[in-house]
Image 1 (cartoon, helix red, strand yellow):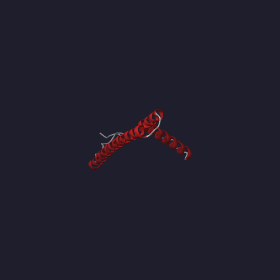
Image 2: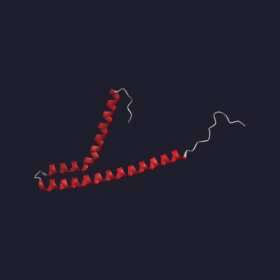
Image 3: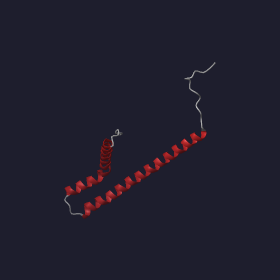
Image 4: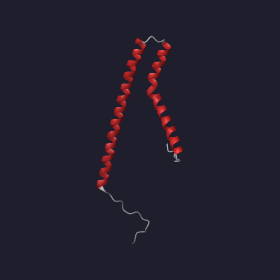
Length: 107
């Protein structure tokens, strides 16, 4: 009996290709883990430096308490606020460039 033309043929398994893709996936997992660890290290480092800056502001500078409180709040929320600002600016710049180059905007 003859197979129809539209029947799927048996998939070909290439072990070298599979091992290459597995190696690439493992490499990417390792790199992502390294970057996450580095990001966490930078986050902790920022808060250590921010804590030192807050202590210096509290004890060394003769500002009034409202200004000290404002500066301390800015130092604490900076990492979260700057991410939102960066994302907003990046999206607007990408949109503007896609408009100028007459290409579809891709988020």
